[in-house]
Image (cartoon, rainbow, N blue to C red; front, side, top):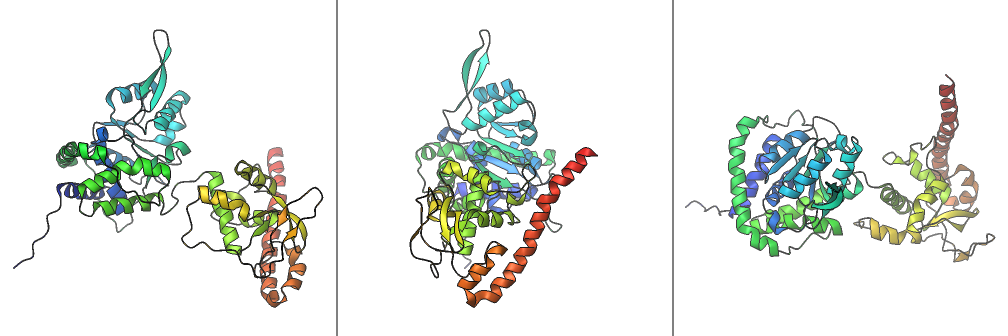
Length: 447
């Protein structure tokens, strides 16, 4: 007797069809296709949602499938409005009147183009993720300000970075060009329309049947998401739970992968700085670092922006202090083996790391071997307390500090000497760059 294959619930079967249909024409990961399928269904169930996540469809290079995905979604979503460019008045008024699904293409050109349109678009996106969100315009005949509803589902496609406030409300769909061995059917609208319309009608019918249950659903959300992500993504998880099958698991795993698995978007400068500082405290396993050593380490991170010149020079201790000041993190007078220097203690960053960075899977604690007892910095005018000394197994940050450190930890002298030699070459390269850069610019101006 042949085994009976269990019948999938109707919702799960539809979501499978949606996900497979999208991947047929666009090179997406399974998680990206699943989230696009859930978001497409969400556009047909907006009456049950108080919040809506945006799709941030982006790519590092052109010709990666952004426009194709937008065109494909326009055949599947509720009341599609494919808008490459419209006036600010049309953008706001049509959203208020129709609450259509806005599919905005070439967003990079929109934000960098006409100022009035860019500001209207930014206002619409900043407030349009929640049901009571509004956008204001002056209307004739008296040109008084009037509020227009900005709430509608939105998919935004473009190259580059969205404003931070918009990215916080978005799910990133980062597209890449197909590999030579990857295959997708060519998107020909006239051939795709019949199958897409049938699929859209089925999804719309299923969503209409689920409106009441979706409106009262309070799904359990993945703890890995931040507060804003939890809020805006809840409608998608509710749809997955209502569909059944393996979709509750797929939805949660997809959101975790896209929103927390990798920092695909460019974080704000301060968030990036906090993460890089935590990296160096963990790597060196210390409880304090000199300002000069921390700046040196940050400058030579190849995947970070701190070595890039700003106004002709890389990151400095003064600029580092200025960046950290809004977080109430300031350099202090701390005692090291070589004397008292300005620096930062790990304890001063702990609160900011806990508030703004995701937790580490296995946080490392600073080493305590070789640390000195509690000491007070005796620099004039300072009453700051230092809590120890750099661990003995850490290479010194500056070549001129080698003798003192080598006397304290003679057992690692050969290793320290080798590391110092490497850092000497890097230091000379950095000094040469700083000296040559202004001279080169002066010569170029004179020429």
